Amino acid sequence: MKTNKLLYFFLISGLLLAMACKHDPVVVPDDDNGNGGDPGNDTTDTTGIACDPDTVYFQNDILPLLQSSCGIAGCHDPGTAEDDVILTDYQNIIQTGEIVPGNPEESEVYENITEDDPDKIMPPPPNEPLSSEQISMIRTWIEQGAENNYCDEECDTTNVTFSGIVWNTINNSCTGCHSGGSPQGGIFLENYDDVVAMAESGRLMGAINWEPGYANMPQNGEQLSECKRRAIEIWIEDGMPNN
Image 1: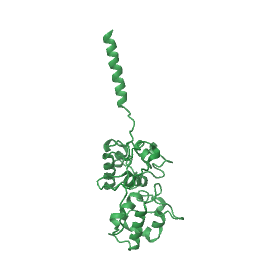
Image 2: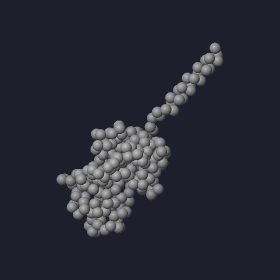
Image 3: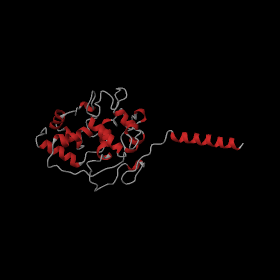
Image 4: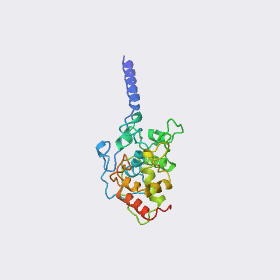
């Protein structure tokens, strides 16, 4: 009788352990201020924190990229939520994107952006896939803990270059919506010539400054910082050099 009770105990214990190992909830990591999984705390107050060149920051780097490339109408914005995935804010990116902090290979978003299958890759054709640099940035962010972090970018507009400042901003915040076979508004922003054409027409500054009569760009995220907008304006004023 005692043996049967022990056997029963071990069987129940093993069953409970197995159940606990399956479908573990996604743990939303704390940000620098310990905000954790509170969806109301997506924006962190980290004024005065200088950017570390070896760190990838969610609010500065990852969020604009995912909002532009994936969290768009018809895909993973809140209104469409294809496959129940929303990629427009930290809480949803972590939970519906099934991000496993520290482990890119087990993170659903990372698996999809590195897919070879055209039926599974994100962004889907005819949209342009993410560049190797963008994929590497997302991987590093996950490896570093997938935190909801932010830093104060140094605003240096004394030497504005297309490749170093203008293109980096456009590519991460705008190109996702304005590339591929069906760019939003029929506007392409895939290369230098495309950006110059938009700048010459006045539509680029009108859109990023959110002026009346222009479609706001980025469409799904926050307005570009004043520093980034001023840098693009200076580049235009300098004759739009391809440097």
